[in-house]
Amino acid sequence: MSDNAEPVSGNCLCGSVRYEVDQFARGVVGCHCEQCRKTSGHYVAATKATHDNLRMISDKTLKWYRSSDIAERGFCSECGSNLFWRRIGEDATSIMAGALNNPTGLALQSHIYTDDMGDYYELHDDVPTYPQSG
Ligand SMILES: [Zn+2]
Ligand SMILES: [Zn+2]
Image (cartoon, rainbow, N blue to C red; front, side, top):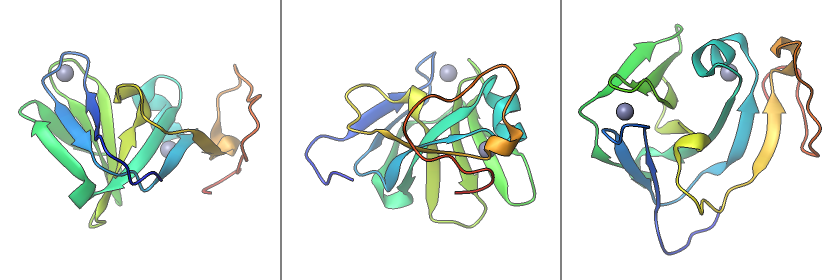
């Protein structure tokens, strides 16, 4: 993505968790898997950054929930905002795009796990869709 000037900021709804991202590793991916549906209330839209590009400003209320054998999800224990997903041991964290503050410079790039999507909505954008992982 852009190797530009200003970092992009993000925060939870109550503002207790705040962070900045210097550079994103990819655009935004919509994940329609069951876990993302349950945790988000719809589906997850997330970008990603390596850990040296993700700077926590305040994380006192950030809690991690081990959601599967391979991954954990970060959320604010005060307001409940869904903030991060990371694979155990990987040097990168997926960042829920809705918690970022505009302008992000990002764009939606694909939808994954559409085999698992809810039956109450359809996708009508022009980005590629993948039945399982991208
Ligand atoms: Zn919060
Ligand atoms: Zn998912």
